[in-house]
Figure 1: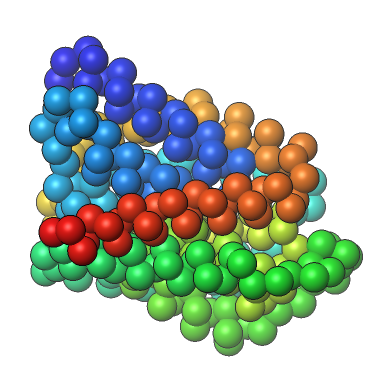
Figure 2: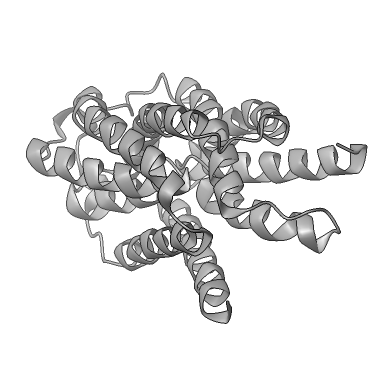
Length: 260
């Protein structure tokens, strides 16, 4: 790997991890298209969709460790949500990651685009009074949380994204969890999900360890900084940032799919 290539991959990882830490996602929603499109634009060999998903799966694991550590205090982590959603998504993500080895390049991108599109729609559903709840009295449907996270795990395991970009709108819109609790808890659930996704990707030989290591270093530096910044930013602004990121990514992936 050339020095320029290392710098490019590091910067992609840093920017993506900072934003992911701030808005409570593992970062693959940002880094997936960045890794797919930016290296070839700069004259480097393009990564395949399988390679990008493999790098993303490993990177997300370390990015979420930094984010969860930054949110460990403050009362924003919901232990029951982590338990019910984390257990289901771990199983689903392993199944999806292993199954992804049998998908074509277009198939992986199609799953990613579908997940992003669903997330976009859900992010724009009105969420009135969501952040007026007492964080110590938040309730949710345990069967619904478990079922939805299992399905998300399968889809996200296929694309190596750990699923936080769709977990966040599900927690906000369906489970009615306050924004800051959603951001903190989704990082913890994503950490668990990334374990299953990483094991599946490694087992099927979809991980490029050099670029993955560079992304990991960038994540460990940038994710905690982003998480700290997220605790000081208005919750409405955080939701808007996340919605714009997901929308832009969904549009780009669909354009690629239909343009061939």
